[in-house]
Length: 154
Image (cartoon, rainbow, N blue to C red; front, side):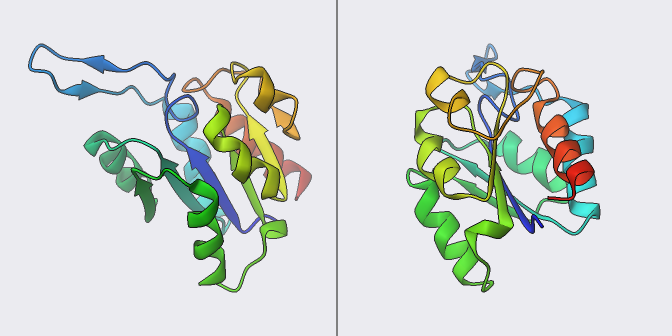
């Protein structure tokens, strides 16, 4: 059974587009379908951990709105962070799932019990994972993955 769900941000929780407003501030778009999926995961008892290679106050704000307590940004080695996170909880990778879309996500995706990717993930990720959503990143892919986990009782 999945106890911890690791999620990438750019390309998974967002469509991967980086937009700046006229003042040079970064603007990110989040899909309410993915938000609902995260809330379902949390309500089912899963811990949701958001891991991003970049920093964005918008990621922090959105995740806090959804009830996500574990938000790590500026992470270059997601696997090491996940190992430490699980060690502190006496959990094993077999009790985890992760969704990623690009090459930096591969080490973590290879280690978790269940791996997923949005439909527009890079080919190297899509051939490796257990689940590929019908939706692209930032457009409901996370919700599909969560619903798959809950339906299959994995």
